[in-house]
Length: 224
Length: 115
Image 1 (cartoon, one colour):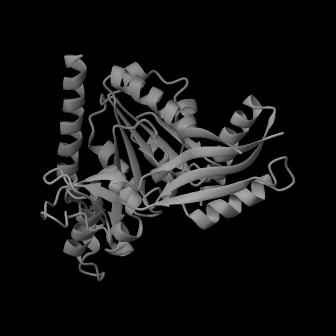
Image 2 (cartoon, chains in turn blue, purple):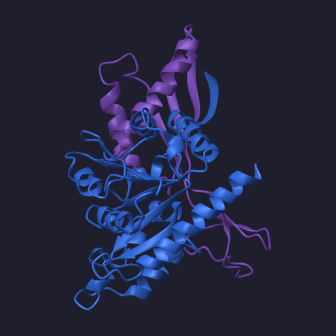
Image 3 (tube, chains in turn green, yellow):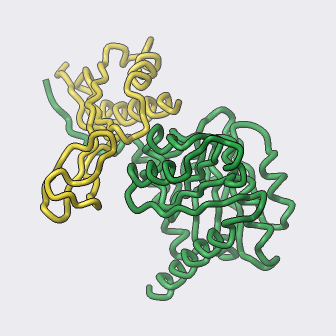
C-alpha cells in the first residue's frame, strides 16, 4: 500500500480563482464586499438603501446571486448603477468562477466598490472565497438571536455583522444584547452595526464603515 | 447542502492523481474536515457514495477525519480545544485567542495499491 500525500485544499481550484480576482480588485483599488445572510434577512433592502444614498457618479456595481429569478437585479437596477444577476440554477452559493464569468465584459477600472449579494444561505457560501476584501453578514431580528451559534462558520468568516430590521424589536421576542454576545462568542471582536432599512436608523454608521474601508483600500493602493 | 459539490471536488482531485499513476489502483481518499468548515460529514460521505457508484472508483473508500476547533493563546502560548465556542484561554483567561484548527477542508492523502 502506498500513501500519496496531497495536503491541499479541497476547494483549491476555487481558492486559486478567488486569489486571482482579489489581485485584480486590489490592483485597481476596488473594495469588494461579499454580503451573506439567510434568505429574507434584508441583503437586497440594505443594498437598495445603500445605492439610493450614493451620488449618481459613485463608481459602484452589484452582482447579485439567486437560485432562480432576476427579481433582485430588477430591484437594484432602478438606482442607475451597473447590476448583474447571477442565476445559479439550483446551486446554493456563489463560487469564484461565477464571479469571474459575470465580470468578463465589465470595465473594472470604472469601479471603486463592488457588492456581491450572495445566495441567501447561512451555510454553504461560507466555504467559497469570492476574492472579496471582507464578508458582511446580515442577521435580521425575526431570525432569532441564536443564529451565530447555530451557523458559526459564517459569523467567524465575516468582518462585520449588520443587525437588520431593528424597527421590529418592539414586536418580536429578540434579545439584541444576546445576539451581540453570541456573535462575539463565535467571533471575538466582530464589528456590529444595528440597522433598519425601513426607518433608516444605523444606515449612516454603515455608510461610514464603507467609506472608511474604501479609504483604507485607496491608501494601500497609493502605498504600493 | 453543498456537499455534493465538495464531494465532486474531492473526486476530481483524486482522479487527477490517479491518472498520474496508471500502475496503481486508488483504494482510499483521506480528507480533513474541520468543525467550522460548514460541511456536514455524513452528507459528504453519502454524496461521495452516490458519485462513485457505477464508476471505476466504486470501491474507493472516503475517510473523513474530523478536526475540532483549537485555539492558541498569544499571551501564554497554550493551545486548547474550544468547547461550545468558549475561546477564552483556560490557562490565563486571555480573551483574544487565535484559531489554529477547525477550519480545514483538505485532502490529506490517497492510499494506492500497486497493480
